Length: 378
Image (spheres, rainbow, N blue to C red):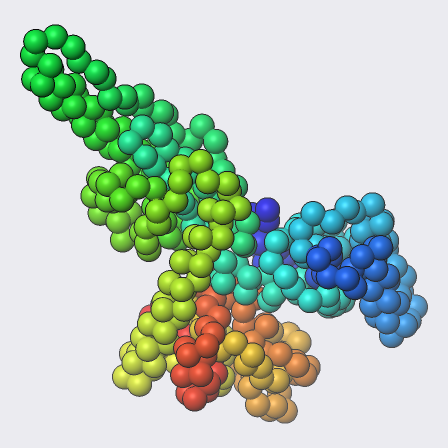
């Protein structure tokens, strides 16, 4: 599993035309017949040869040094996931490998910065969320990120709650007393789970929470959660306590993605409203790039499939939708950029802002307004 902190570190990797980074997204899914018998390795070598053929002199030598650890790693790699991701820059001491269970097409680039758009978009689509599974006496917790699930074992203490049988002449009264004790222990158990969930959210920074288990237990747990955590609960599911992690992933991921689509529609409406009132929002490439240059972008929002070419200043790295003769900020020369969205994503994510790719209905709505926009810090 690739951690969010690893993505953040890659976003902080300095951009340098003199020290390009080899970025590899390799489809290794063994359910695809085209990847059997290590054909994915052949696909990588073909793409590397294509890049190498376009380089000369020192640039070609530098590429060979960056490609060598990638080919060595892939030669020994045994597929366990659907996509293998690698970044290599020998001159900067960068070599990163990671796997994701989500499917991404094979693509290889050799550019001045790591090509992170597919990974950032994947992190947006498969945000980090937690699954808290409870019954009257036990609890389990799972973290889900990039479509992968991991159980945090021993995260919760177990409260032993058992129904006791009473005997004697006052059987009914004793049974009622024992039942009250059981109810008290169940409530104590769920309160303890709520407290530990609060601590876990601080550690794992869950964007959302899903509660799973019997209705009585999940309802009571929801009531006992601190108010700020109740707002992160996006749904509850009835799942058997001994459910396999893959089953938990399948059921909760469907819920999470439905919530994501609704949140995207809300986000676009907020953006269009703010931009229409000229109060905290922009739409369109030019206005959004101006806000980006001014350091005002808090949340970049763009439609699935939207791209826009433009220019980048070689000196101050300002981005332009049009093709002016020189940089409007420093007068420096511009170089053509095939995908301004990709550059904007890297700038915003690298400065702690949020990036939101919207799909389906939300994407169609945003495309009508210009395809891209931003909610602003000020």
